[in-house]
Image 1 (cartoon, rainbow, N blue to C red):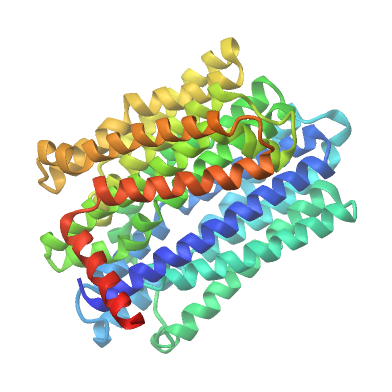
Image 2 (image 1 turned 30 degrees about the vertical axis):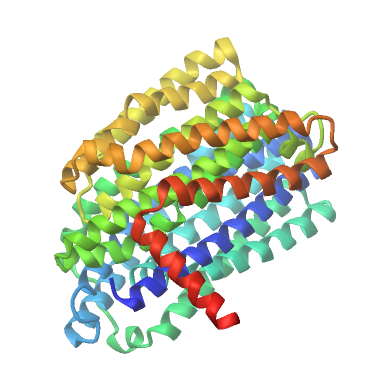
Length: 512
């Protein structure tokens, strides 16, 4: 791996960490604001809007990740060659044309279908407000589809850090707008308008940065090509189908809760689900940041680098999720109470179920992402099957166990499908023996998980009775130190330990 690629991966991971911190902050503050300023049912409707937005985003139809990957494949050669630049410009122009057509169709279909569903569950005295807000939301969702091309291009060109920094800044801007609109009493319509302005600004900024960093895109003036459409339609639809499965798995909970238990039941469940998904997102940033570079290495035929990056990504992402999940399993109630106040914790059965789900999810997504980065998209039917199974199980189990039944439906559906199928396909695709993978990757991770859980519950017992403001900083510090030591002893390879030892020795010598 070149020093330039390593630096960009590191910058991508660092910016990803920053974006995740900002996203966590924004999510925490916004949910607290929504619960404080809006009636419980309207707060649930807003969270339902965001879930429905994931369905709308599906109509990107897998073009954005395909665009990123195709750019990376082209850059597997010499990015300075005029022919390569022309290919990228034509590819971007073609995708933009597709996005424009799709966005118009999505606005019309989403407006009608969404309104019909919302009217069936909305409080009668709030239908007018919800209807206006949904129209505004659909305008923003359609704009998002068109603007996705700039983000995908930055990602494929290796400007991962730039893309994430712009998203972080616009999220903070959007949070300020949300607070102002809620404080001034504009309610759901004001909150939705703030969301649209935030996303519109984000897309404009990303497009500006794209053409500033790569001015040759303006000079080339790419043309939409039918041959490019034919080339990308197959991989895009496969990616979209895989994404549809992910949506059916991860974005149906609020819809099912709204339809069976009512919108008022959403906020408490959403708080725990948001934390669980944020932990997974944070853990996978090394995976998403290195994906375009893995594509370039694969296109260059450098299989050793590909396998090295894959195994490193799995070890790092799983180490991160082990630390985060074990901490939240022990102290999740205190975190929720500090965030939203007493009375908003949904219960340990839901929390532990969702944490186990994202732990297994992180493992298979790390492997599946690497596989798809090489152009092999083999998870379509497994993903869709998992999604359909999730809906069926959740609809049945919610009648017996309420919110816990919804969480169980998601976890069981994943265990029966993606959690085993994605690793199976990935290991075969990269020709990695399962025995070697078990010894070098899974065994150390499982030992670390057990040790972290025992440690966190033990210190939780020791600090029992302390106030939350004293307890959480103390246990987080102790848990972090313990996890870092475990990671060094159990997960890191000998070359990695040697590299760190050399850096520390050089730093110590410099200080002297």
